[in-house]
Length: 131
Ligand SMILES: [Zn+2]
Image (tube, rainbow, N blue to C red):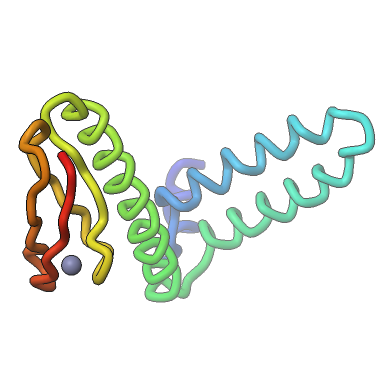
């Protein structure tokens, strides 16, 4: 049985982190479907589950890898934003953060220096800021 399954899965994509996310989404949708009048969520949940099974059994590995890479890019973008928010919260008493008005880069200056001219390291724009 184990050997049969190994032979069956040979050349197929298998699992990845996008599949894990899709499984959790379908579990969440199935739980939502218990709420009255939200039963159509179960159709969506089974759709997501079928897509997950399709991805797992797919032989088009380059396509599945591209989907996984796109998902990981989006996930890392959110992780970076979350890390920055955490850093801003941690340093809120010693530093001020604000966006460059020209290029929207995040700038960090020490607090308590009064009126200062901040030069953006990315685009060179000078801005007056109160710290
Ligand atoms: Zn800038």
